[in-house]
Length: 208
Ligand SMILES: C[S@@+](CC[C@H](N)C(=O)[O-])C[C@H]1O[C@@H](n2cnc3c(N)ncnc32)[C@H](O)[C@@H]1O
Image 1 (spheres, helix red, strand yellow):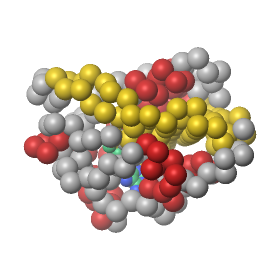
Image 2: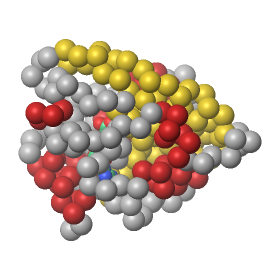
Image 3: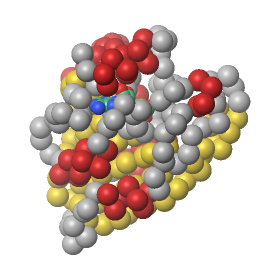
Image 4: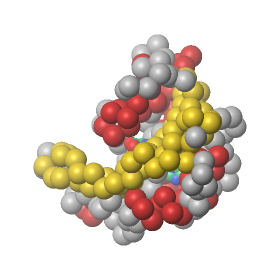
């Protein structure tokens, strides 16, 4: 097992369930008005976004490095009768990438303290967007106040701006429109109930 996989298996192994199970709000508001098609969810974790997309008519390929997270997503998909709409695939995205092209490619908080070549990975993600399709990347713009105590995956992380991330993709401006590139605040509740305003870097890029 690679260092990256081991690190994420340990992360998911700490608790029965790591994430809230709710869809990421910036993804939901973007996708709700769209006509469903094929979607790719990169770093899907326990599958909350994939489940939401499938419930909204999308056929989803959902990818993560952690088998533990994927097993949880598979159990949920079965329980919610969505298994035929969600193709769960284990990839270390540093090394391999799912095949095909997609109307929607989503990377929500695809951060790692284990080295991850995000620029290369997100360029590959852009290549997987079908003509007329959308790439949506949402990153932490800053560490949540509770991260330093509870979550080593956020602590010590550097947070480039949304503009810097988009620039790192080297996209051909004649082929892509920047529908939204901004830092967006969101109210959030931490693991022990504390309230905070978090900043997310939101990037929505549309392929012509
Ligand atoms: C911060 S979590 C975000 C999970 C989910 N997208 C969400 O918004 O709740 C980052 C996810 O990326 C996955 N990940 C990290 N490095 C990866 C890699 N090299 N290849 C594939 N997945 C990776 C982790 O296992 C984890 O599930």
